[in-house]
Image: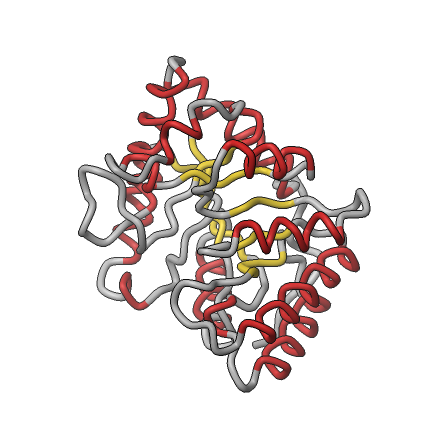
Length: 264
């Protein structure tokens, strides 16, 4: 069994076949799907999915690519919603220097603010670090007081980066990029202990080979797991077991979600 620790299955890309996509994932051994939030516009669709499918579990956060003029209002909603529902993590948060650097200062503020919220609520963080890995790690090193935990989503850094992440007590999310021939991520991941890795798809993005160029979906996590098993020279069951144990430990997936209800 696999846990997809990062999938945007509430996305409009799944509007025509979301139920069938989820069924395919379950049939392919995916037991749990974790959903990072994007912004205020994605909350309702995400929560409706969580209501319909209890194994689809939501997080709450403001994605760095959606930090814009109204970011303070967005952060206020994140803060409010974290008080109303037992989300499993604060995410997806971080800094993105790939698409647009207009709001870099605001992104850093939002990143720090949401880390503070994670500390307040005792939750892990899910970090987006596209073209900003050194920056996001550095801020985390500054703020780590022994209470922070989390995962660097879509890890594509160096062994040195991985060592810094491990020293922080954090995990690395491994997805479709590990299957890309020229990405170079596979050689690095091969040297990182399985005990620091979790599986993810980032569906509908970053489809693994042989589906690259097509819409990604949670069932394709088996391709990522197979590649990881080959790199580690272990069997698929071991990859599934260890990465699942890591995800359960990080996100405290044995907790109940009946304590609170969210009014949308």
